[in-house]
Image (tube, rainbow, N blue to C red; front, side, top):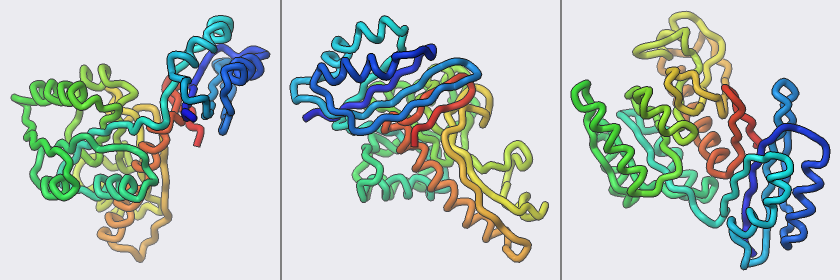
Length: 282
């Protein structure tokens, strides 16, 4: 059996689910998981269906079988094969906690993906890449070569066939041009203090202000810095008795978990974009 995922969005109207599932059944598909959501504000309907189908079924044959329904309801659809491991490019600077957590979750099978390359503006993660037998690219960045480095990244995405670029505490801002070109294919992680605590040592700033909650946000990258559609968030309570270093340690744990969950949702086809927000079928 083939295991596929079909995602769709369209204007909401009666009969969508019945019509689509009827065609899938006629094609020999067995639905294993189904999630749907109606956005009342936009009247948009979103749906994710995971199903098994006979070995001869492909993305193309399923698309052909469901085309009458797709055309009838004006659906936007995409179909993915769950047997194909998504390829990731992970970009990191000096702090490697989020990178290491991703690699561990892949190792134990919780995250079904493959890291095609690690890119960094520092040498710190080279040894990690060598241990994991992952190609490592050391690309120092400055104002003079920033555009060239981004061209290199686009070439790397093309050459590796990467499905997703992950900024795992990569401390460089992508240009508006690159953010637009790779929209929906780049996920970033940042502490949830923005815009309150920008710049260096945000957790130390939070400690000095006596905050009671710290957290992290994983989102798609857009030209609006750290304001792209949010995929996942988490917060933890902190107290006055904790040190700034305690804040940092707890913050790194949260960042690692949130980023890994966001990547998992994305590669499993559980995230759908709706304007400036996301629909996440977790």
